[in-house]
Length: 67
Image (cartoon, rainbow, N blue to C red):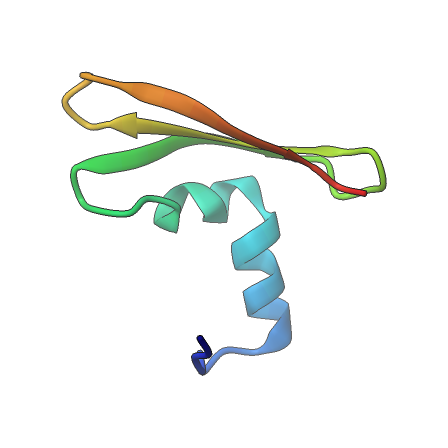
């Protein structure tokens, strides 16, 4: 899959790596939200995005590590 997003590389970098930006778009539907994100952008660093149903019925931490 491929898509074109008409923004600068700097804007795309910020959207994917700045916690405040990630919380604005990182959810599949409007019924979900991403109230918290953490990014340690370095080898061995971690990436955590808290995913929650807006009605409070469920939630989970989506985690990863940078290698």
